Image 1 (cartoon, one colour):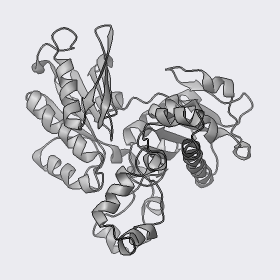
Image 2: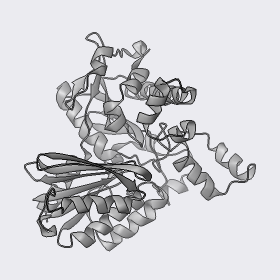
Image 3: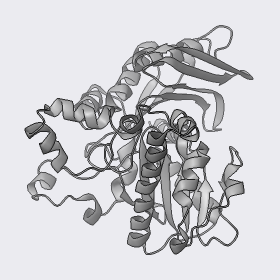
Image 4: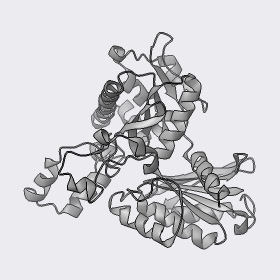
Length: 396
């Protein structure tokens, strides 16, 4: 079965064409820096790697570029659209409606659209991918895999907010958790590597969107993102944790509208608000050249992550490993070093030489005396989505 995976992030689109159940990748690629005049499309297929730089201002245009190259007569991976048996879509927010992978129906699309208010940087783009795929691959089965599903194991004491009970029971207002496909995939890889029946692991997903998860025996027990994917760690353009009184101050004292505050916290804050840049590669480059704002932003980013590592170690009463993953987690030696420095109290010790060695395979970057493993694991949300899509199709 040929399964096309579409994974639309807040500023990127990752895609893979995977043959299941063999898990053979026919082609893969990514559109990055969507919204800029220098967006990049990287495509790997037929033994070739192609790179294009273009103005891709929206996710719709990005998806069109992806589908064009898949069908390209010279470099594409398919001859016609009917070669795609199923399309698996990553969808960020499923609320209480979706606790597992599901077929895409009109009702499902309607609810994904309704949840866009809770995940404004993601659900609209996820839905765009579904609508375009339905048009271009009319015979393919469309499947939605929800980020929130993996975190359904978080206990009530961790996912319930300290507000009147009616908001929980009547309206489903609670912490849901996100990046579930990524945290699930890398945590399973880490557990296989550790070869421990019982484990306490912290997985750290660092990309334009960021999150951190505490896992006991492979199950999510706490997570930094909550009701919507906006709190927790400092992200590319999202503030992460703030004092909610700030929102009232912005509205009542400084005259901002609620829509303006929502846009400010989701699209103008985080690393972008601190430095003028949302891409960590640009920030690190400027920090190395002495830019004080970029240097401070990196320190703030690492500081926030270290606070969560300490908190999650406490609630799990121990820690076997921390796992870095996603674009920044896998590639930023600078941020990993800032995070893992001065962590001896938790028996975490980074080997700086190992940290500098790049590799696509799972690797340790801790010292031999570190009691906690520091692992770098390349996430593969697309493969995880393909597995879940194939499982659903197999039961049809």
